[in-house]
Image 1 (cartoon, rainbow, N blue to C red):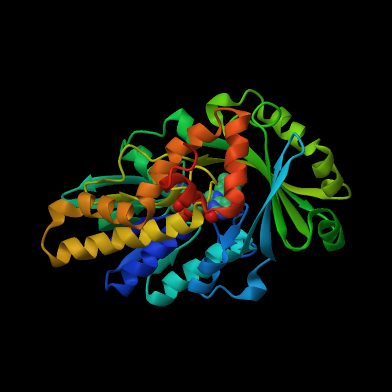
Image 2: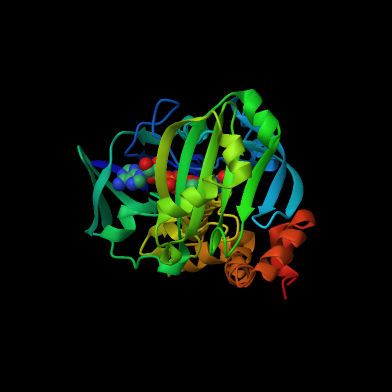
Amino acid sequence: MKNFDIVIIGAGPGGSFAAKAAAENGYSACILEKEELGDKGRYKACGGALAWELVEEIGFPEEKISRVIESLELHHVDGETFSKKGKGGVVWRSTFDKYLTDMAVDAGALLKEKEPMINVEKQDGLYEISTDRDKYTAKYVIAADGVNSLTLKLLKWPPFAKDNLVLTITEERKTATSNIDTHLGSDAVHLFFGIKNLITVGYAWLFPKADTITVGWGNQINLVSNSREEFKKFTALSFVKQALKNSTLEIFKPHLIPVGLRSKLYEDNVFAVGDAGGIVDPISGKGIPYAMMSGQIAIESIKTCENRDKLDKLGITYGRSLDRRFLKVLVAKRFTRDKIYQDEESLKKFLRLWESHRSSEIVMKKLMD
Ligand SMILES: Cc1cc2nc3c(=O)[nH]c(=O)nc-3n(C[C@H](O)[C@H](O)[C@H](O)COP(=O)(O)OP(=O)(O)OC[C@H]3O[C@@H](n4cnc5c(N)ncnc54)[C@H](O)[C@@H]3O)c2cc1C
């Protein structure tokens, strides 16, 4: 039996940032990760788009960025296009996640990779966490094991509502860099919208990396009738077909994105962070920065409540800190999302506004009303 203050399940951005914060605050922390990490390790279906501020904040090396982006091209299938300027980077998640996990290990957290958690239960006031080869105990558990969180399933937390899940399909298609530069531009990512003729609630995308195009599609899961056919309809659009000509399929992967919160994010010393809690931007599907921040905020909440001897306030402290930092805006975005997809006119209005406003500004200033 190995004893820790905090056991973190999952070494995605949420788990790694929680582990880093835990170690920096003097807690003994262990991350359990079921896959192997690193460039040859687990593949994570993701656009991998990061805002430049995040790249700078964590000092992510520029040579590890697959493509620097200067604009977001927004296509409506009826032919109208919109362009949103802003610097960002597109990364492979295997590289990015390993960088974050290394930060956690450097700070003093213990990493157990290729060691899936298979059970968690409370015994005599402590959590007992079993993997396929060992047992661990901890006072606190951080559920950072993604949208399908086994941790929260085992602890019998309620699942996500169906209209809070987006089903995505990702294809990684290898091609010549010159092909990408010609068809997509050297520094742009492309998003595709259209309620009637493409996706009811969601969008599709082409995110170029150095010599690969990440082709993605995502629709609210309860509105999907045949995902492969719907994905095919996207790749048959003439712009997309041109860009994907002379490319070879390397990876095909379906995955879920949560676009609304779980009914709770804390209970009895267990914190849901990142995708496990549904802490994702419901309009864009951006989740990496929110996973990182929620992981860090969970640990800060523990520290604050322990220092003030107010452990009964852990849940409130976590919830309020999340709200103050960004959660209030994400919750408001969930309502705006319904307005955006109510008809083509509203969708166009949003795309027009998005060209020159941040989506948080559109939501908080009620520009869609
Ligand atoms: C198709 C797609 C495109 C996306 N594009 C973007 C984008 O461009 N930009 C952006 O910001 N966000 C994007 N997102 C969202 C982003 O990927 C997630 O929000 C983010 O990965 C959440 O991080 P996390 O740490 O909460 O969970 P995850 O990254 O899912 O990490 C969970 C970790 O837990 C591990 N795990 C699971 N079960 C166990 C277990 N039993 N034991 C041990 N370990 C376990 C997994 O192996 C994994 O490493 C996209 C998502 C999808 C699906």
